[in-house]
Image 1 (tube, one colour):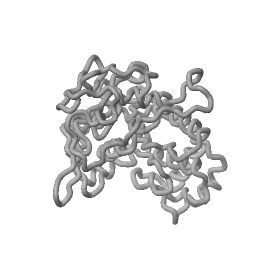
Image 2 (tube, one colour; image 1 turned 90 degrees about the vertical axis):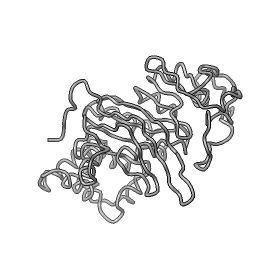
Image 3 (cartoon, one colour; image 1 turned 120 degrees about the horizontal axis):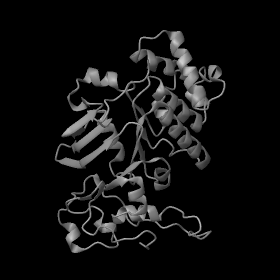
Image 4 (cartoon, helix red, strand yellow; image 1 turned 180 degrees about the horizontal axis):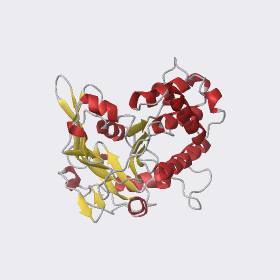
Length: 336
């Protein structure tokens, strides 16, 4: 009733040549450029980078949920062999929440404050499936228990404001699973939570992924979280993929200076001295109004050269991609 199978041998999700433009009365801003990736069933792809790098816009573009001023251009966007870019709005709306589900960063802006959570869970299932209210309630209670919420019958009567941040995010996970999706998109789902609750939710997401066979796109700015959940990683900066590959390749042998500097910001047991400040990356991500030419990271890069201002072509070796004229120039642990 709740599970489908993607045709054997084909990726669950394929994205090629994704661009996102924001149109203003005076000009067009190219905010995401030439994004390519694929995802297999049961695997996790992490999109990582600082705020403002285009991670969330990329996720929203998959489901055509971009802000009104933004436009998506894409060469290929396939989910389970289906061309999402050609779907009519009605068909795409039927897909959202049913076969593809999304968990947003702030559950308080996603949950309706005027309805109990039980009503919202039941409505999600009955919108997409022909089930009785009793069946929907049973499904909701089962999933609330599955995500670690005790006394689900009582919790279903509560309103979002009556729950803690961690419980609200667990409710969002249960809601995402109501229709048995094949793909889960998690947009920084643990950002507003304390470290202990973060760890619990990450373990929960991995367990659920294994149990239900989900593919997952996990968005984060935290390389430490990425190391725990990812099979493959793409690193975004100012709208470009600057590096991508298997989690082991990217985290153990980063080629782009930005990736290495992000990793250097993570506390290292046995190497980071107590009571010392962690490294930071000086400067900020370019604003959307900045015209990008060459490497967008060069103004913050300690190993930048004059040629970094020229147009760059990504270097691909095996499954590892790097958008840099000096791949590997900055080592892990090197000072910025």
